[in-house]
Image 1 (cartoon, helix red, strand yellow):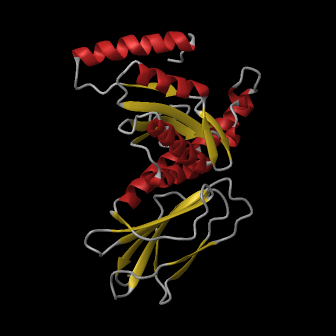
Image 2 (cartoon, one colour):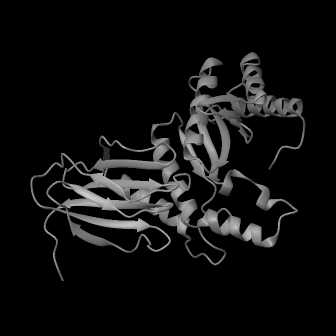
Image 3 (cartoon, one colour):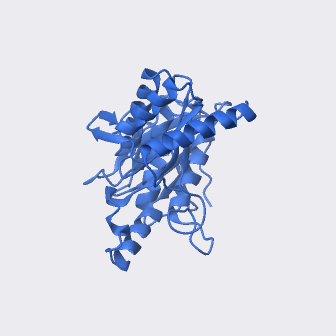
Length: 298
């Protein structure tokens, strides 16, 4: 629930509840407060909100338990979440809470980085366009980019809001998976490659690239995500180098674009120079599964 009381009332609530719960259940992890307005970002700089500073100072002065600090973020720039994560980690450490976990426990794509479409004065068509973009390919690209970017961010948990039916969810009201669900599928498949390997050429928040190889060194994966912030973009050129096998290589290519779904796969032989040209003109993602072997023609 959204807090409708004063800051003082919340601090009193947290003090009473945190102490009582910790005394009764010592092993229970206590934390909060699920902050929505985390602060202001200017370029690469981020300044946390006065409430966060006050909350942390209060917890420190009152010696209150704070096993985790939870916060929310919505937007259209994946890099914004990374910058906020770094800023929140920094302020936690500066206030003596180095052992406190930073938990981004609510996030999702916000088309146009604006809530105006959901206001009471907005039209029904504006709301429909908002939700179609959130659940569509632009939302899928954002989700995939965030999940990859956050791999290097100082957070312990990130909870997409949400995996249920309807608005903001991954399924429509009938339970049918939407396009943003394919982003979660793609990242899950990519992470199955196991060990990350060096990958260069990305543009933070706009063109996100990642690569990995499995423990047996007989399969690799590459993921390329282009967000809606990367405008006027042409094909993406990828070079696969230092593959851990010296045999012919095949590449299974899947994509999430307005024209292609993740279920559709195309297999091609990798050229001797390891170069690939990937058509990704707008928001979307491409997943490459790289394996040794010849391409078997039907």
